[in-house]
Image (tube, rainbow, N blue to C red; front, side, top):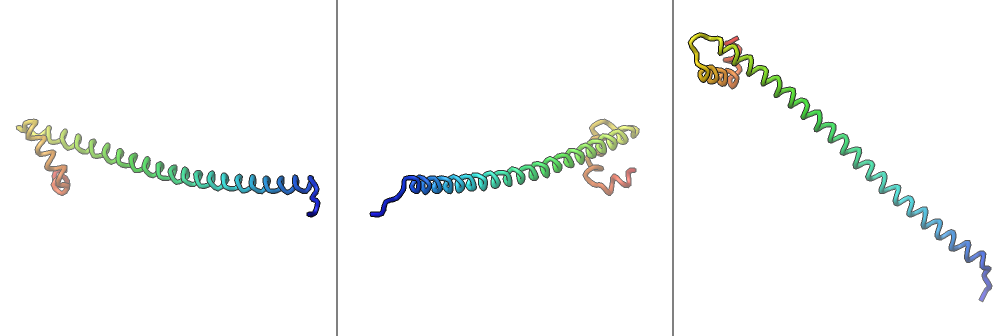
Length: 103
């Protein structure tokens, strides 16, 4: 058997450990990059959802203002009870073409 120096064995073991450590670090970096991409996608989706909710809230606010305006105008009519005014306002809001005629 050939004699092998202890320093050669130690060097080979050290190289093997270093390569294993490098592979482990690369694997961890890949996992981190994957998780970062997931979080970026989540952020984009949350931004889209927040924008949609904001727009829906604005539409609802405009609709509430419109309903209140129509109801106020209908309540100004002579000889109409509050329940009749509500019924008329409901019809006008449901059928936009009638609302245009009313104004």
